[in-house]
Amino acid sequence: MPARPPAAAPVLAVDWAAACRRAADGLRAVLRDAPTSRERVVETGERGKGGDQTLVIDQLAEDAVFSELGSLHDEGVRFTAVSEERGVVDFGDPDVLVVIDPIDGSMNTKRGLAAHALSIAVADGHTMADVAFGYVLDLGVGEEWVARRGEGVWLNGAPLPEPPPERRLPDGRLELVALESADPRWVAGAARELCEHTGRVRALGAIAVSLCQVALTRVDGMATLWRCRSVDAAAAQLVVRESGGLVEFPGGGGPLDAPLDLAPHHPVIAARSEEALERMRAVASANGA
Ligand SMILES: [Mg+2]
Image (cartoon, rainbow, N blue to C red):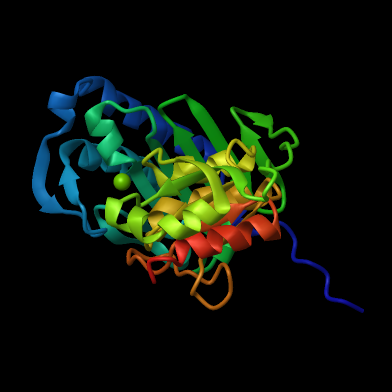
């Protein structure tokens, strides 16, 4: 007799969405207090554990999230936080990971561009495949994406509607594709593959936000042109997968073997069909990442 699937994982017994919403309120307050580019551009003078220059707003945003994590810990919840600025912080359980990017799209945030998000994932293991809960709050358009493993996706609190099919040009290219890590050298490096596989590209500037667009086929595919860190993609990749889409971290053995740590290991690609994913794989691997 085949083994029965395990009952609902204990990690999903915690009301992570409520904790994320409280953290989001804290983040909104940080951004309200620093409404202009002039205030948001201030750097702390340090680099976060993820390697980027830390902005004061990054740090305050992270403080808002960690304040909620501290409350959860006080309530008896045990986990380990993996966060862009502070790195790995022990809250009592090494096998439950809370993977946080307090602001995905920091450059957009500091310059006043729309696409920026709070991204929080919860995993009962150490790879992308183990993510059980994903929360992405796109602060630009005010969209809240929540995904629970095996249960689906909620957009602004309502079950995600059936996404439309992907769109192709008559020659088979994908009509519209989101790119991230759009350093012009990497765009140039992938130029041939982009011409071959895409009709138009969008570079929003926030990996989590771009990935979520695949969940509703607002784009027909998504690829980073270089290696991404788990904090950027962990939550949104579950949003895509729970919407029925496909995600892969190419070059990592299994498609979802990418570790939930702070190092950039692999690009991330997403699409709604195997064939489209194959095209995104070609784009993402063009620079040899
Ligand atoms: Mg960030």
